[in-house]
Amino acid sequence: MEIKIDLKNNQKVYFLSDLHLGYPDYENSLQREKVVTTWLDSIKNEAHSIVFAGDVFDYWFEYRYVVPKYHIRFLGKIAELYDMGISLYFFRGNHDMWCFDYLSKQFGALISRRPLIFNINGQKIFAVHGDGLGPGDYSHKVLMKVFENKFLQYIYSKIHPDITFWLAQSWSYKSRMIHEKKENKFLGEKEWFWQYAMDVEKTIHHDYYVAGHRHLPMDMPVGDKSKYINLGDWITHYSYAVYDGSTMSLCKYEPK
Image (tube, rainbow, N blue to C red):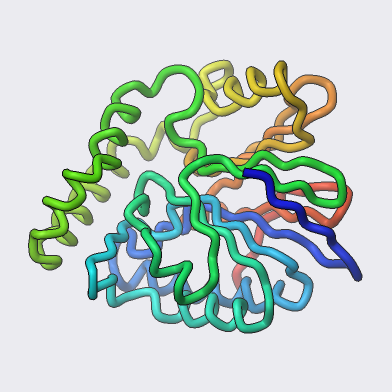
């Protein structure tokens, strides 16, 4: 899907990913949530659009009448941005892939699991969360097929939220402990989304490839005329990317 955006009067498009609100516990998550909302407040007068490239929440499941009771400051700030006329885009990552229609109904957000192409002032930006794309990572790809199964989602929805939230939070914490070292290490030629971007670029040109998932800020060439930018995270790096109408830059927010 291609989305055309025309920036005017020094407007910008912001990209961020992997906030993992809810991780590892209420107190630590709340501190990060306050940092995120402060940053969002600081960029709201320049933002034409904000793209949340997945794993905004460490766990999210929408029952018919129930959503997680946390993250009120973040959701309130998103509501304010929407009311200001800022366009919002949310990718469903591997942690919050069970975001269904709540965010779109409440905040007008376009929600996608698949890549989106942002055509901004004539330049094309390929954006996605990034998990499951490229070579390798086969166990994760199989697991995501299970999580995406509509019948299994239905069965899961019949379990009481107190149980499912506890299960998900326990799983997430253990998974983070196992993969944390890998997430902070550059994998060279095994950076699967970088490889994926180079394969796509051979067929069709994009000026930028933007993804999250890896929790490691990266700004790397894709061929001679394109770049791959990984957005990092808001657990350790507080990093994001901003497109100003001609150039995309990888930036870091310094919490006060």
